[in-house]
Image (cartoon, rainbow over all chains, first blue to last red):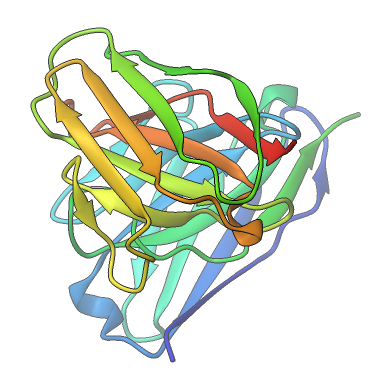
Length: 115
Length: 108
């Protein structure tokens, strides 16, 4: 059974850094494009970025966030630097295997940026 | 940037009702649109891609239609498990994708 498990969320001060991870199970991870999508508390969904042939980012995080992957470990990462209070959200990783939009999502990890 | 606007923002329905949610794009996007369902505290679930293609495993009471700037998600007969928030998303501007603000469906 395919599964995505995010980890590494927590409380960080404004200006700080955090790396969150996403473990993939039950499918051929190295052949799959992966996305990060976030959701601020009580708000809607916001695409963060994707790693495929290229790596692309949404404007609010470009230059501060970096997506990477380790196919040998079936792991996806999101390195977040220069964090702002508005980055507070649940961060979801998701596969992108068809239809050019995320298809299967993990359960998310909460990142809180607060002093 | 392509903006997606959903209407209504919320609606109430009874079990068995036919429900339609509309998503409008700020410019033409062909059929580059999908729909998601999200229940409280859970991850989104993809229902529709390519404007009208039903995701595997999704009940046939869900359907999507439209092209260009106006799209609809229809639930032909709402079931208790369908009460949730629904989001549209466009990928015309791929690699950038943008979501609508969401439509909450609750029980009347």
